[in-house]
Image 1: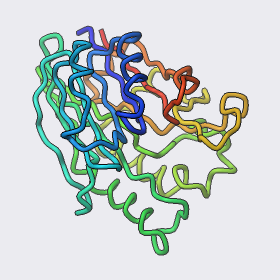
Image 2: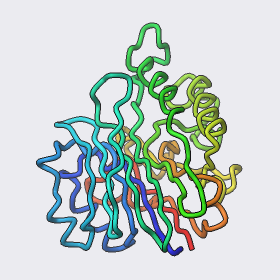
Image 3: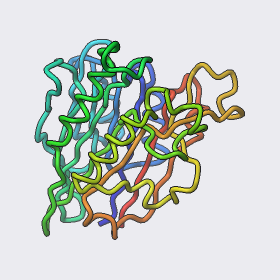
Image 4: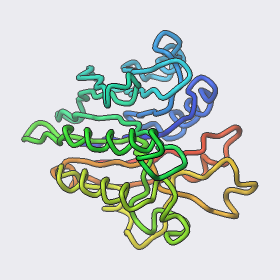
Length: 266
């Protein structure tokens, strides 16, 4: 089952359409899942992406905020655009992709960032994030002889000590607090998901997919976090061939603060 999937928080698909086109042309994933598209459905750049061969596109967008999109050059159909926490935010789309004679149920997520204060009693954005994680427990991997499941996206949590530039200094910073990391661990383990990135790249190795715009020299300071994830049902693990975090994309012109994460199966 040769298949390549990528996930990328693009931080405005219209502003960075050229970067999306460059990535598709250079890396040619079968499916690309975008988050933070910041684009209503009727303004999404469908024609430009279809011109590159990505004719199957499902979007769940809203003006100026949030938004997810799954684009594919393989046959794909919409399964669901799930709402969370009664907020009306566009943060999820699930699709069914046909790949190598197998069906892949694909969940594309953009988890709330959570604001700056890691206290749900005083910060409603953090409360929203924790509630969102809890509701995600309803999304379970489906797997049988013909179907496997992938969950990808910007989950806005760096779970391991090696997923942040400094575990000690970020313990009280949103995205790496114990309540978040433990919550993400429960979501993964109780759901039966497998973290494919860390299955392929040893947990002892530092690994980041996001670097703040605030850094004058993001590469030199290298104060990153691994916020972007690719999970699967257990049956896909033996087919995993390669994982890549495309660090170089953070240095492209007018980049997103996130970079693509890619998984290849065969």
